[in-house]
Image (cartoon, rainbow, N blue to C red; front, top):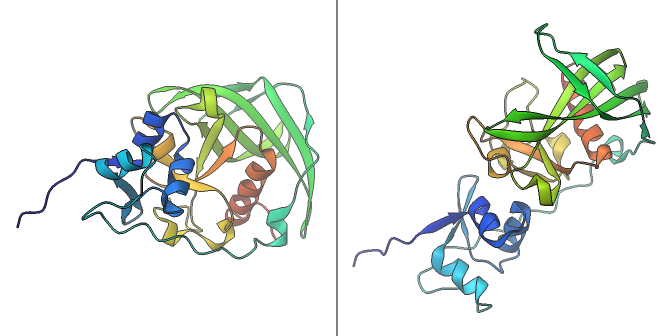
Length: 239
């Protein structure tokens, strides 16, 4: 008997259809309220399962796929990853990128001193907008150091639905500076971080299909934690 081929939806497509966030769609699948399946790290939902969910009926369907397994409860993050900082607004500033040509202005900016096991470090977060992945997006950079002696550590780009969600995403890299492609390969330092596939929220040309930290654009503590992990991996800070 031939198997019926059914239309499938990505989490991003469902989020766009229902005007919700991608992570909310993923949460419904992981809670088994919306029936879905995974191919590698990719989440998919059949048209029938989505319709049943939207109708408020049972999540199961005849011949449906196996529901996504609920994720294991991650261990508590290291104490350093629970840190917060006393962010203070600072005057706008500009930064000339290493190519010697690109000069960015950050009209909104914040700074804070952060005490780490290796000593005190100073971080600056700058906000701007720039065209990326096919559209003008919110852009947030976390710098190490004091203006003007600063070094960029991580950057976040606004999601396609940024106007309503205020979400930004930043690609996760491993110790070798390579993009992390799946949840299974996520470095232990990122346990407990909210993550997503970057191109599921930053949808457009050249958007990486890589794991990313997902944050509200005013969640500077989460951005800081991401920056600390990367700064340690790059040898910028120790301990």
